[in-house]
Image 1 (cartoon, helix red, strand yellow):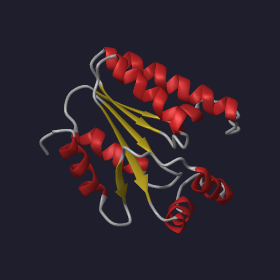
Image 2: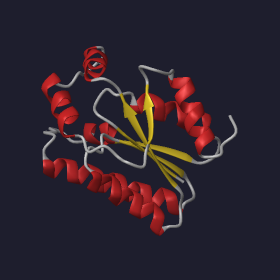
Image 3: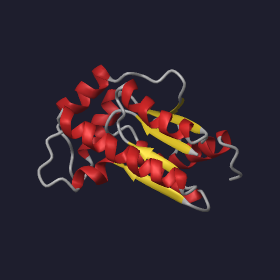
Length: 163
């Protein structure tokens, strides 16, 4: 199974994905774009770097799905094309998929970002908010409305996992 978490920076993707990963039993891998980006000595967040990160995530996901892991992909995935590439990989292997769109008001994302250890510039969050291509077939989760714990329960229920 592939669980793909998308949303603007500081929307709560990683908090929900981490909670889901901890609640799942068995073979689970949580692949985070932020962790991969930290491996780059001087990252710049340009198109070439983004393509590299998403390709690396897809390679890891492909290997993990083949090894029967539940794969949690956690990235902004602001463009439909990037999400489709990951979903296609899972479907080609006969794996079920679920897209989870972490949503929140822009001011909430900016507020959360300010509390991070390494906040990103607010103009980047605003840019992502403006240009984010919303997935039509996703489960929407808004952490301004529900808790992380409740969000994880909803997702696990959706995939048929007993909480």
